[in-house]
Amino acid sequence: MSVAVQIDRVSKGFSTYPALKGVSLSIEPGELVALLGPSGSGKTTLLRLIAGLEQADGGAITFNGIDTRRLSLRERRIGFVFQNYALFKHMTVAENIAFGLSVRPRSQRPDRQAIQKRIDDLLDLVQLGGLQQRFPAQLSGGQRQRVALARALAIEPQVLLLDEPFGALDAQVRKDLRQWLRDLHRRTGHTTLFVTHDQEEALELADRVAILNQGLIEQVGTPDQVYDHPATAFVCGFLGEANRIPVEIKNGQALFRNRPLLSLKGTNATGGAELFVRPQHLKIDSPELAALAGDVTLIRRHGAVRRAEVEVQGVDRPLEVDLASAVAPDLGERIGLRVGQGHVFAGGLTPSFN
Image 1: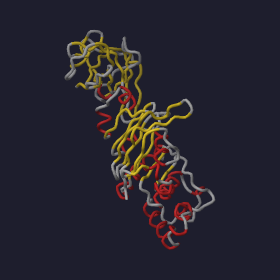
Image 2: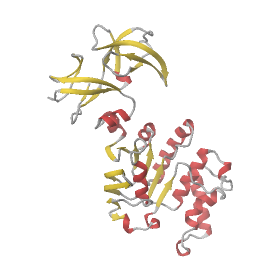
Image 3: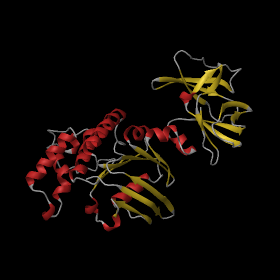
Image 4: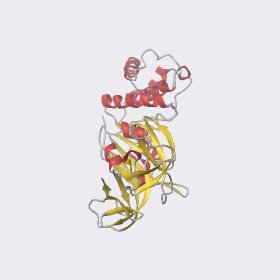
């Protein structure tokens, strides 16, 4: 049965380093939530606290309203999957999957036939039927990770925790396993938290994303909410790619060197700010008409599109612009840039504009 997980003002420090600073997060039964953030943001520490592998300095974590401090590790019924698989090398696939069941006290241990049926069912679920007698060294990285997931599911966990589950795999295997994990979650319905520093992975897999930075949660929302409506400058810069342009806010306009870029919506603020614009939201225009004008210094392939780098006086770094095939400037050409949409951040000000 899936449970609701409530994290209430949880803090944790190591020596003089505060890993978590009063973090709160609610997770619904059966929800798939990604903990996303850079290294050192506190996401793995939070996962270990939920699992009971670390003890919080303050705050509480509850499962369906029950304080987990009152529960033993076995009573928490946590399925934990690590980045490096953590499979027992001397055990077969079947023995690895059965491990959590076989070490239970005799009174709680299923009989041999029930354990074998559970192994067979899980091997079918993770699409590894027929490999039960192989050892981990005889499997690919993707297969090992699926065995690790099957082992975590064998104990019928209340909560499934995944710590960088695809971090050790190459790009194509990661992509294949993402869709597989999403399908698996739909079939099993476990309350699931997974840690990742890969924003594409989080946005593709999760029902909601919690973005951590320096021990604090900056924003929680659906993938569309956190990407399209970032709450802070950190979230906007961390999710996807964004150009940063210094602007002045005056009379409902974002100005660059006293020329309007675009009108802001619903703000009476004034003063200096920073405009975040994604490469796909900069459009090429006449240098005489555009508020942003600069020289093309580089054109390169960027996935499915070509991208230009444009040096603009007054901007610290070259602006990156995705190019439509019909509009391709030459190296050294002077072009204008028009802002389609973006986000402005200045203190408490976070208006979006189009």
